[in-house]
Image (cartoon, rainbow, N blue to C red; front, side, top):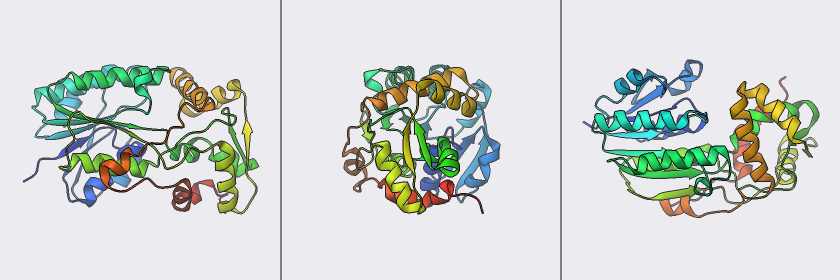
Length: 290
């Protein structure tokens, strides 16, 4: 009988897709969740739900029992390196064979706090005794529905401090697909994959696609950093995280997150979904409630 794959941060946007993809493949999964409000989405065949905080050594140790592989994702937080070290330590103690680390597109450049921390987390995994694969997804298309849907609904405005900057956003569905492909036997030890969408988009491009799908005018508004920071702080209730996210948006403004790669197709055999496809599946998030 196959040992379960542990998915940390399983209730995150990407984690949920990793669990769903593995479940659909018939692969046993142990889904470690901190946010119990989102657990309903993970009540799936072949999935064992366990509560756990990556800051809690005992919880991490318990989650590792009889695990063969780990999908290691940590929340964007000031102490994410400490969380990564804790998971690696307990995985090695439990003789886990392989780990897939969810990193961030451009981590090797270290241009923001988030990128620097992700690179340090990568190094921790690479220095372990386990086989490892690094996935570096770009910013998620789901970010539009999570952070900007309210202003799109209320005023028809996509308000972000990115000007005409471009970004090759990826659908979290595709990240989950890539992770499940590697975890479920298609091992690529020592490899790094930078996963992007099929095209670099500006906010004007996104607004045009939203206008088309919603049947109303949506326009991109270039906001100042102070407004953006205030909105992020309200959404996250975390000063460090809000500042880290603002730094990433400043990279986006300079189009430093615009490169498009072929890594997803090279890895899985099929390319990424377009923003139009993402909107078709998630349009309700941007519509006014009846």
